Length: 222
Image (tube, helix red, strand yellow):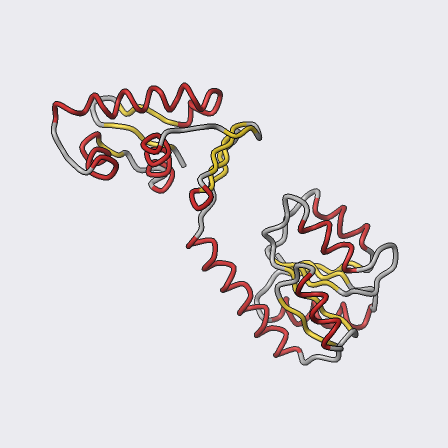
């Protein structure tokens, strides 16, 4: 879903029509308040944003987005402010792209596709996991439960990430030993059990996401 905030009816309707006709889902908003209300029910994949708007300007909206839980959403500025200074201010303010009016519809579509591709690649390189009360960011070595940071040992952290990377797949103790400790030996399977137990304890209310598959190993469900 793409959200477009633009108070000029003719521009907004043309952009929304174009995006829908090439296969995107898009919604337009004439006022920032309508945009904020829509966010309560659906989070877009991309935000297109004019700068000169009623109620509050686009730079203020961009600032709020980047300071909120929506900060990862890519934002492209579409605006009549076309000077180099304006572009620098927009990009330094957190915009991912900046397209000055007047612009061609095909260029807009091409830029949107490129921006979404970059965003998808970033997600694949730097995955983050949110499952109920649990949030994990492997790249930043962050584990949070109910918004509170947890302290895990390196092995506990690696074990949790391994289970998350293979969500829905049962990992045998032997596979876990190989991946985390680098060896395989039946007599050492208790090492896995002990680490799973302490990991569950540290995760507290989120520990229940780690399921025991009797006689096989462990998994985190879909």
